[in-house]
Image (tube, rainbow, N blue to C red; front, top):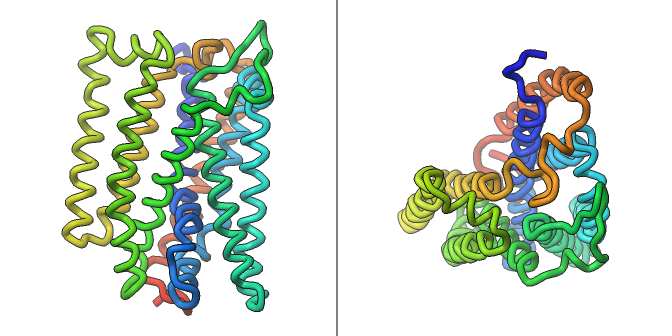
Length: 335
């Protein structure tokens, strides 16, 4: 193995990329489910559903890559994190199953469509909340003794984890609204603009709240953000968030179609970067580093060969599907 190749760090970036790809490709999908009750039954809801119908099936690929990559590349971290977060993770999986079933059955069982619409919204809400609570519980810290989880069943349920969960609901809802601004037209697009403006303000407030609390959770977090001289670099993250937020509000006020979605993704990317600043090089915050949790180098190198082949293939067919179904969509499909 080349001496300059730090395989644990490389795999940490691969998993982070998979998580961000999932947020990019499934966030607006879940967001549309969150906004479904605000759309009128009939053409509005059908148009919203049609905007994601061609691409939504493959979005969970990145969630599997992130979870599977954690298990294979960092087995010790996986063995600690999973028992600590069983409840929200199981709730997320069941909710994703529910919304997937509802997605298909609302077309094939029109007599009960309102119930399938409710199931679609419920599944989207529970899955989003579970993802945010999982992130918040991980960030606030997991009790570890030796090489195993030593906390209680309800340790994941705290005011901070609920704050992160609520923030993710607002963020995904904004992604869904800005996606529909980009992909729809007419009354649905106008409705999405009206929803996006307060959601954008809400997301900015949520990012500020989570960012203000996070350094207070741990002395290590505070040091990574504010110690000299790295504060000169970490300070650029909130500065970029402010710039991105201002541009987002400006784009919405001027009626832009593509920029609101791209700038919302920018806010998510900067939030992920801030998360990396807080916890890196830990994989279990304040307990286990990526090097302590990593699989043997031979295993990491073997998986890296497979990932270097499969990830470009996944990106290629995903990009192709989005290219084929580009343009506006209506209640009867794309045009």
